[in-house]
Image 1 (cartoon, helix red, strand yellow):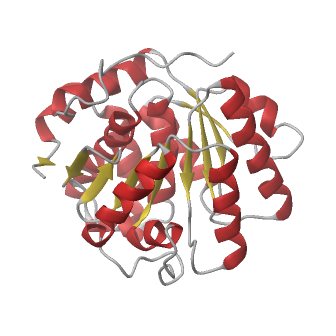
Image 2 (cartoon, rainbow, N blue to C red; image 1 turned 90 degrees about the horizontal axis):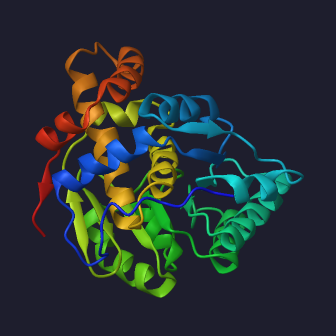
Length: 280
């Protein structure tokens, strides 16, 4: 049986502040969630290392024979559409259906939807099978889920600010949280909006940082009852750690290593002191 999320926020109508984000990190470290990752082949090892550094337990189980059974015993499930194949698509559909039956939260990262039709259709099928707790993407990917054309490959051609109102509609339509990544991250459950302003441009020079963020959201969703708090905590943890890593980095290579180190070293106190939450 999957572990029940800890109720860090008593009400989903409460505002999310720095202390709540710190409490979420404490909860993650106290009860490390098992996170099933059905993710793309480019970032699998990096994603696992990010989860380990943050304090979670990764499991890269993405075959159709085991995906459903493993989803049922996980704390959270990530589905990332970066490099889908026929067999992994079948595993994804099985995993999200099983997660729904077991009450396990899952996160959709709709990489490059809108640009290519097959993965766009797959994303819609996954959402229909069992609405995710969180959808995380760049602005163009979020707009594409609402019928837009998508971005330039995996890169966004829209700003997070452009996608906020559509994100609210998607969140209400599917009963989910939508997290729009950008220089300022915008996250919404359709009513509340959280804006986080940490992070460094070097994050875009390391393959898989955004993909790993989806996995961190699945991890926090496994220990936090409020999906918006889970998404915000994951975003804050990764971006605050990135700020620290950038201080000592000479370039993308040392930044990637430094990011793992800073994730492992990050404390709830440091997160509370350094996260930048903007007023709506």
